[in-house]
Image (cartoon, rainbow, N blue to C red; front, side):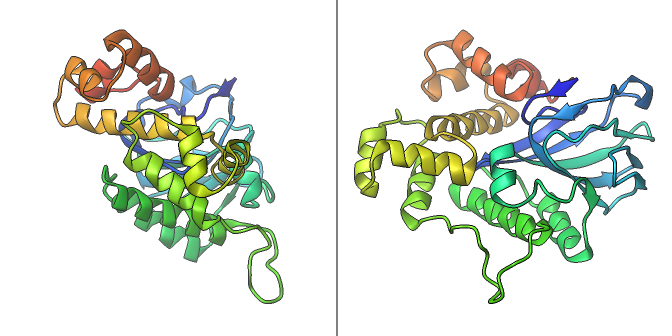
Length: 271
């Protein structure tokens, strides 16, 4: 079985997305004997908050407890599950392209070293923010965690051998997140950055693992999810955020969050 991006055996309590990273808090609800062997199309860090979590991934076979952090590269075959009935965890996901660019494909599944583990725990305790500043703080923490977790040797001067994210690209990303309710105008965005639209799209995929449209849609749906959890109705959220109609909003939301907006609003998500 292959699970799609950000799909887990668990009930989502909250989630936010920025720059190709997805940070989610989940509660475990599937008995261990019902978890089938599977793999994920994206890579993910698992931060155990409560309960005992059994990792079956080759190279990381262990029984984890609160405070332990596991990295599973994209495509890792496993049958991980919680031993206890009520487990809590945070999942930090990133796509295969992004994992490869950040040198996280190498080394296989593994428990994190103390410095990376502390940073992952700090991220897990952060409120999943809706405002741009909070999202960018989470993104920075995700990048630092990836840098601490890579197995690729650094250059002699300590600098990473991966090309740095251009300033113009970050400005574009921040604009898309901040203005996610506005229509995407690739030509205008590229002109403001001083690059060709094709170059802009390629840079987004290389650094964030998403196209500009995908990143903007995730930001918009993240905003919708936050408003639903605050108690707004599905119809009101769909209208306020500019979706064509409620059914269109429901289709997009379900494709991204694997549940209907009504179920998310009720605080439940079942795999």
